[in-house]
Amino acid sequence: MLPRENRLRSREAFDRLRREGKRWRGRLLTLSIAPTQLGRVRFGFIVTRKVGNAVTRNRMRRRMRAIIRLRLPLMQAASADAVLIGYQGAVGAAHRELEKEIDHLLAQAGLL
Picture 1 (tube, rainbow, N blue to C red):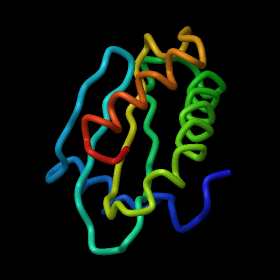
Picture 2 (picture 1 turned 45 degrees about the vertical axis):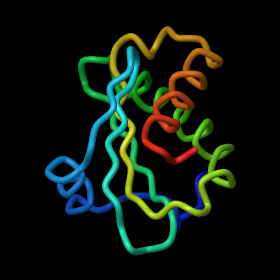
Picture 3 (picture 1 turned 90 degrees about the vertical axis):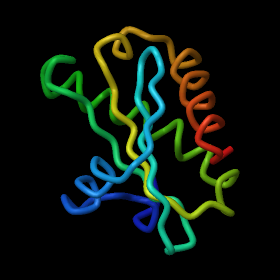
Picture 4 (picture 1 turned 30 degrees about the vertical axis):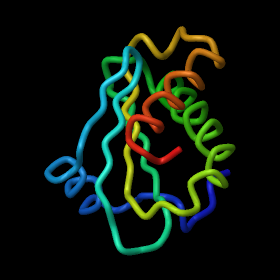
């Protein structure tokens, strides 16, 4: 489980990222980041309804959360809010392929 202090939960935070965040688009996912003064990285996860039913969307969010949880210790120096948005192609992707895409997006954003 992603620690509570590293979770983005409020609607205002998601809206701020949509307005002010910088985006990096991959083949399977999009990463949006906005700097903060909190001294830690907070993540939110979005999977669009086009991806499938609730079970499929929740499974996709769990997979993304698990990958991010393992990378949090590498991001301790960063201070930002981030949202990962999953798309249809990510559902059938292998775990390693998702890891590779997330690593690539985080590196582009300067978090890894």
